[in-house]
Structure formats: structure tokens, C-alpha cells
Image 1: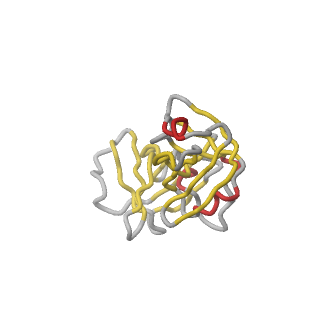
Image 2 (image 1 turned 90 degrees about the horizontal axis):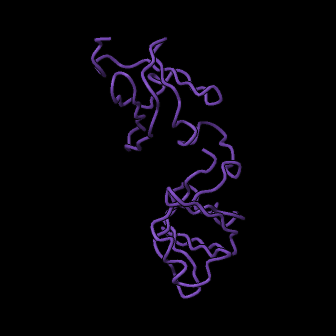
Length: 168
């Protein structure tokens, strides 16, 4: 995927087409550094230059070139706000969720499936893996996740006893 989800358009804000955004990022201040965003509803995708961004508690307000009225802004209600992957700063350690999604997950040489989603549960994250054995919930713990190779698109795990039936 070339773009990364950073927010969702809640509604237009004001008469000049500014958009109220619910941020889907741990760093909403990143919006203030953006030059461009992509708005998409899954089928359609449009790039817009960012004129202005302001961050308020719980929301971000974006003024975009080409959206100049409340009516124009209304067209994008519920659309995703994405940025180019190249604009995502590298982490000092660990991985972004979007980097993990799509990894091929193995226990030794047994293919368990593809990591499709990361769930934040509070205690620890859980990786949803879909494959030939169905859906497996893998706890994101050091004793379970043995190796993550993001460039190689592979994760190696050692599942705790009882996590899944050992029929295969």
C-alpha cells in the first residue's frame, strides 16, 4: 500500500470548506507538517495540497486547496485521510501497525497465515492471522513473537500451548 491512514473526515467545518478530522494516529501534530493528503472512500481517491492545519483536543481541522465551501466539504464526510508512506517518519524501535499487516506468519516452518490486523487490547496488542488453519489471535509478546522481518515480509512465532488445536 502506498498510503497510510491518518484520519477520517467527520464533517465540514465552517463555510469555507475546512474539514473536521478524527485523527487515526498517535501523533496528531503530524498534520501540521503535511503538505499533501489523499482523501479516499475506497473507490475514489483525490490528492489535495494542505493550506492550513490546526490541532485541537481530539480533532484536527484541515483547509485544503480545492475545497472552498461547506457544500464541497460535505462530499468528503466519512472519507479516509491518507498520506504517502514516504511521509511517515521511521520509529526509533518497533514497527508501525501498517508495516506488520500483510506479513506472512510462521511457527517454525508451518505457515499459519497472513497478519491481517493489529488489535489494541490494553494489556498487549493482538495480531489477527488468517490462513489455512482459520483465524488465529496471536498475542504480541516477546515470548510469542520470536522474529519480525518487515523487509522480508515474515514473522516467526512460537504459539503458547492451547492457543489452537494441534491437529495439523
